[in-house]
Image 1 (cartoon, rainbow, N blue to C red):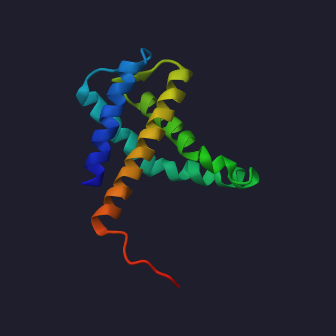
Image 2: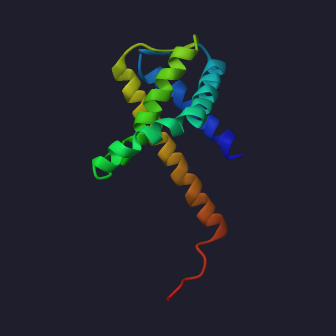
Length: 130
């Protein structure tokens, strides 16, 4: 269920990005769904590799880079999705980075809402005093 909701959210986000930025082009709603699926599959298959590659620089920056790792991963995955699909195109680097930032924010909000829902459904649990 989580995966389907996340794909639906990402599809709507891609459609909104194509409406907000004139340099982001998606041919149809079905194309936006394919973009969401390809983006998610790339993120699962290759996202860990980018996170591992950024681990040492993140440590060297005293952890500051960890704040930007999701944005960097999303930007690379969005660029790869653009290169793999003919029905999806991002023409400028500015639109790529702005789209990656919006997707990062939407993913964070989705994750926050999911965790809040799970906490509400299961309850906070008993208070431990010791």
